[in-house]
Image (cartoon, rainbow, N blue to C red; front, side):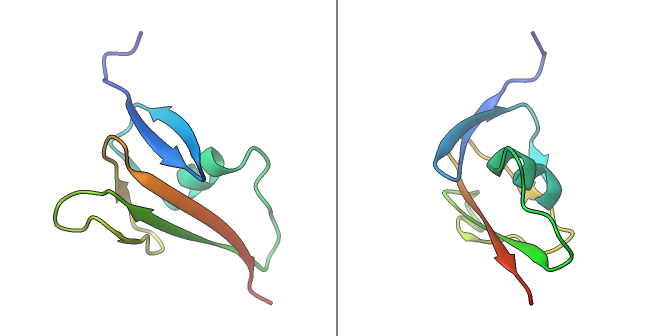
Length: 82
């Protein structure tokens, strides 16, 4: 059993238990999709709510880490840039 306390977040409607305090875009995509869509024109939009006090809702920017909180709701949407 890991020393770190796991927290439960909701990713695309499914509960996920994670030990990390922060996740990047790639890690969130892996949690959201068993087989993530790939291709040169695929991009992801990550929105969240029930986050930390100073920024409870928002959109994850590229190269940003998302600070996780128990019960946080995260939506990862794939889109085609073409």
